[in-house]
Length: 90
Image (cartoon, rainbow, N blue to C red; front, top):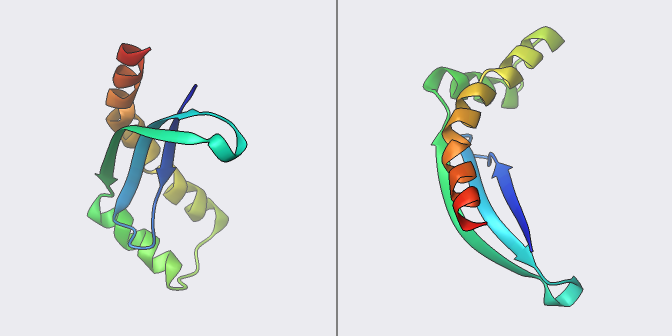
């Protein structure tokens, strides 16, 4: 069995969805069990910037790097309950 955290931000750009799952089996007998899931909303200012870029606003590479780095520290802090769940169930 393998435990995985999956992250995605969909087209609504409302936040990052996280899922903690157990994966077992192989090939056609693959099974996925959801352990926990949550959505972590983007701050309004960050969401506005992301939507501007998605609608064609030009930004420099430095601005792109800054935009990409704005949410990970808070996201990692918010994901810490997933680590605790994972440790309790192992």
